[in-house]
Image (cartoon, rainbow, N blue to C red; front, top):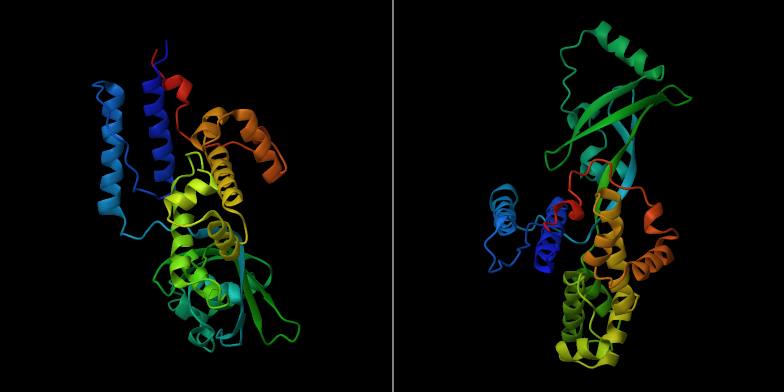
Length: 314
């Protein structure tokens, strides 16, 4: 017979390992009174999280307000001397510079590739190869001294004077934090005070930190944060353009989506780990949110996580 306390500890480890894979090393699994192999694994997982948190990453590494933009196009217009005549916003965002820092500078200033030792013949040969439609791999250096490797295409404009260099690259866009958004909106709404904004911020953070737990009623949340349910509902909708419950549900489903896509954890376990009390309810909510069921979403192909059913001792 499978013991409930074993299953719960294994679920806790799965949840924490998934969080660690996303870059969150702040979790900790409470130790139990059991002295067995599973408890040893719990201790090891906690130790790994602590080691990574202390030695591998600086504080503030985890930012829950970062969202991925799949690809961002970058385009440079180069003159006859290969200096940057114009540049689009995508290139500025990817490399971290502003237009003043890039315009009229040689493209070489933003590359770690060294073409200075090439002969004139080699340079001419390279230019002809590029303009014939070949792709070249270039290593750009960002303002923060990070390397962006890109497969670049090169073409020449019709007048023959300018060259277009372009590529697409994954880009992490850091949104304004909820605190900054609240500050902006507070200045536009005379009915809310600074203390009200801070209260709504606390509720927002509480919801994000408790996605695996059932959401208390609005009355209970209001009591917990020392306000009334009307002010809580009205304030949250004003600052975040949605209700507390809808925000909570959407965030759980987004988290579940990533877990389904990037891991091989069984769907029922993912449902449980994201606070849904039954798989049918989870499946129905998921389909309503994304337009297809959890089973229709492609599963992770490279996950090495072992299914819980294979780990649970009898």
